[in-house]
View 1 (spheres, rainbow, N blue to C red):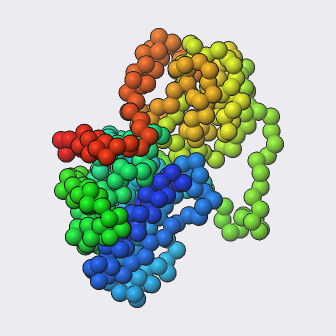
View 2: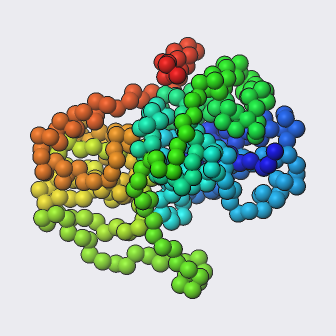
View 3: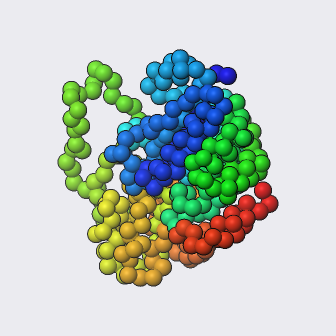
Length: 382
C-alpha cells in the first residue's frame, strides 16, 4: 500500500472537535491493522473563528520511513479522501491567508472520493462544486441540520458516520472492522459503531467527470512575488479614501476589494424591505460593516462582506424583516435591494418562498430516542 491521506475541511471553532475526532479515528483504526499514521491540523487557533474554513489531515503509511518521507512535504497532496463537514463549503473555500477561492477538490487525487455531510442531493451539490480537471467520486452522508445550519459535533454521530463512510471510500487505508474497533475503544458506544456500519453500507458514490460541476472560475488574485513583497511581517493597510457612493446617492463603506468573507458563511440574511422601519440597528450592530445605506434610506446587505453571523437578525426589532436562510438556496452574492427595486411584487414572492424552504434547526439532542428517530428520518430511502 502506498501512503494515503485524508483531508477534513471544516468550519473553524464550530467543527474543530468533529474534524479532530475524524482524523484521530483514522489513525487509531490504521494502528489496529498494523499500520502507522499521524493526525494534525493545517491551521492554528488564530484563524479558527467565525466559521472560517480550516483543515485537518490524517496520514497513514505502512512504515515509519514512508510516513516521514510524506510528512517532509509542506502540505499533503493527492488526498485519497477529502471530507467536507459542511456542505456550504462545496462552493469553495478561502483560507486564513485570504489568497483566493479554492475548490474543495483542489487537493483530491484523480479517482479520489469527496465525502460530504449534507441533506442535499448529489445533483444539487454538483451545481456548487467547481469543475475539476480530474475525475473523482462524490459520496454523501445524510444527517440533520444543527441550530446554526451547520453540521457540528454534538450527539448526532457525524464523526462515526463519516468514519464509516470513509472505510467504504478508501478501504486500502483502513477497513470497516478496524474502524469499528477504534470507534468502540474511543467512545464506548455500540450505537456509534452501528452508525458507522450504516453509513458504510448506505453511501452510493457518484462518478464525476472533469466536465461536470459549476463552470464559474473561482475568485482569485495575483500574490506578490519575492521581488515585490515587502520586508518583514508588516502588512500595509488599505489606502485611506472616501467611502464610495451607492446607487442614486446612497452610502457604501470603503472595503478591501480582495478581502472577501462569504466563504465563512453557512447562512445569509434575507431582507423584507417593505417592512423595514429604517431603525439602523442592523447597520450599527453588524461587526463587519456589511450593510450599505441606499438612496431611499434602506439597508442592503453586501453579501461579499457578510460572514453570516446572524447579528442583524438578532437585533432587528421587526419580526420577519431580517431572516437567516441557508446558503444552499443561493447561487450568487447579488444585491437584494436591487432585485427588490426592480420588481417588488416578484421579490415578495421569492422572499416568502426562500424563507419557507428553510430546514428545521435543532439545538442538539434532548432524549435517548431522539437520535434514532431523526437519523432514521434523515436517511430514509438511502
